[in-house]
Image (cartoon, rainbow, N blue to C red; front, side):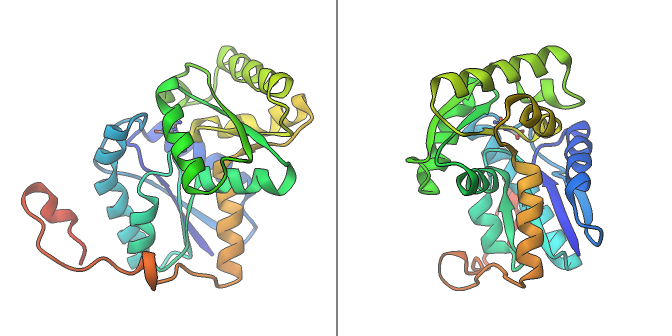
Length: 245
Ligand code: 2AL
């Protein structure tokens, strides 16, 4: 099976980092095709970044559909463009935030999210609302770390900082699990789970395993109702190249 792992930001080091995490958990017969947007911001930390990242992301979804991939993963914790990607695709599309939150709910009554900048916290709250998970998430905690500080291997200093915030979540929030709020934290999941003694869930690996499950079960994105294909129409200016076909 082939899973297209899409980094919707344009930072190659981050794409490579998440590909390593994805390949570590992929089943023997699963190929991870790691790609990134060709246009857009270096990291996605605001609604503006997200809006500017979407044309490049949707172009990758379309390319993956044309290549016949079995599933797509959108590897950014804001799940940018998830609804639009599901309109565009017939294969399943999994966002890492939804995947991590769903998996946390399978093993704990409640969880906290430990994420990057305070700037990204409202997005996480909006996703919790959209996914009907507000009652399961006790708190979304920012570490003050920018996404691009996590683009390559996470430094010892940042590992400590993220670990400390997870410890505070366990001490203060009354939760049984932690959800990591950035694709760039994928390399911390195993060690934090060992150190903290509770499930620490990274969305990249959670999404890969959910994508495999849907593909094996031949469950694909519904083309009726909300995720029906978008209608074809002219797009003007620079957007013409991104128009649905
Ligand atoms: C992210 C992420 O995972 N990738 C990115 O560009 N921004 N998440 C975040 N919370 O800022």
